[in-house]
Length: 497
Ligand code: ADP
Image (tube, rainbow, N blue to C red; front, side, top):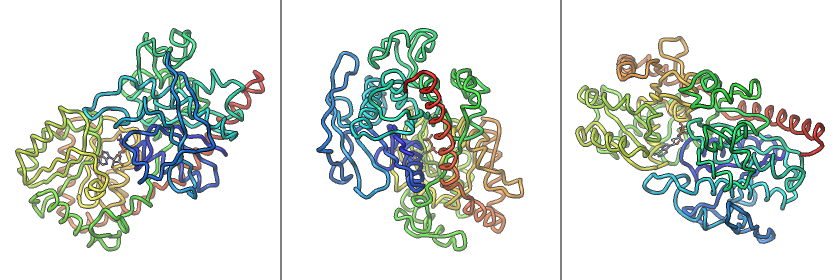
């Protein structure tokens, strides 16, 4: 199949969280199964054109695209090796993308022209397929930012522009990010005003909501774990106001568990680590632990676990549950390596805890890919007390690195981590979103930690867990086919794409 992916993120060069990892790995897995996968992203200001081998496509003309009242010129670039199986196209439009940041500026504030950025991205991606005369079987949009492409596919490109009556697929990586804008946003998108008032696709409590529109416009919708798919249709807390819209899609909405890219996340040959290791020989992990402690200036108690955290510092990740415990656990000899950026208040609170317990709590308020690898490898436990978690990749990486996850039973965490109490346990699971329940799970981990043989067994079991992408890629193929058939059926019925 010819698959056109549209995403704001792609690891490692444009990554904020799991979305970036997923797009890279899924595109690679699909290309490995002989599909022609092309990903279109904005050419962000932070990208180093020489290092990333970014070059303009001379044979493609620049295109003039309308966003609201303004016309923008955009040029197409290609990135990476010409031999790579996945083709990565970048849309160069300096007025909209020529600055640092993917969603936010350096202060963490959302870009005020986010809607314009998304609108141009969607138009440019569809236009590209037309210019290349490349018959698209599936337009696969990732998250709210990519939803305009689905709307244009349906409402503008009916019978023109995009070759082939391709199907539309939307993957929701996080329902909390919906891109909600004032109703005038419909003009920025250049769509009919009626779409922004009830019962228009975009209308959401008097505003426009890109994700809602995408859910309704796509032929098939999925999210990134079966449990999160259930949670988001059942409950306002998880559904973030879109539970009814999702439930209304019935069997066309489902959950496909993400995979982990074990080529990148492999403790045996990870260039970021001071020593490699395997499930059979964990001596390298001990080296990683010692090095990490030295790197972060921690004086860990050898008899107490070192807990790692790598993630966005936002309420979703359950940091608030861990914060009240840090001091007490540090006094008990636990140590913590915390890497993350996000909410300024949460960052300040973690920083304060680190200042109070400099020997036991290290906080690095940065985005640092290599250090993330060293934390996965050097820690004994990995903290993921998320309030909700669409899938979560960090727990899968931790397992592969022999670091046992401590997680709340929600979303993809519920689908991947089995509590130590069970015969095939690979981590520690708690239910209530409370510091007390998290503490109880950590205490259980502490007890197991003291029993080195039992701990070793569970580590080995965790390292052998296999969440590789091949299973998920097969499931995506299925929904691609279903979306393509649904789109073809529509063409038959209405006589247009
Ligand atoms: P989410 O998508 O909600 O952010 P996931 O667990 O799915 O959470 O994926 C998070 C990804 O982002 C992981 O690869 C994690 O290692 C990475 N990550 C998050 N914050 C940082 C950071 N500060 N430095 C390096 N990597 C990070």
